[in-house]
Image (cartoon, helix red, strand yellow):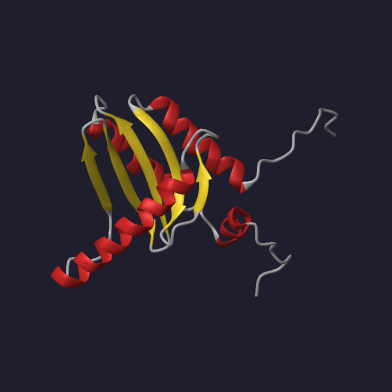
Length: 147
C-alpha cells in the first residue's frame, strides 16, 4: 500500500505545451513555436509570448498557396515550407491535413538544427494530437465515451 502523495496526471494539452516549450528552449535561434490548424486557428503555443494567432493566420494562407501549387504541379501535399526573410525564417511543418507546426527563427539560427528539432517534434507530437486533444484545444467539451 502506497502512502506517498499522488501527483495529478498531466493532460494532453499540458504534455503538448511541454513538448513545444522544450524544443523552443533547447533550439538555438528558435524564437517562437506554435501548433496551428491549417484553417487559421491557433491550437497551442510554446509560451505566452508567442504570436500564435498571427502564425495561424499566416499558416492558413501559406497552406492554401501550397495546395494550389500541389494541384498545379501534382506534387502532393505540404510537408514543410520555409520563408527566409532578412531577420529570420518562418518554418511550417505539416503534422497532418488539419494541423501544422509554425516556428520562426532569428537570422543567425542554424536552419539544419532547427529543422531537425522540428521534424523530431512533429514525429513525437503526431501521436499526442488525438481527437480528444483537438476537442480540448478548441474548447469543445468531449463526451465520456466516443462511438
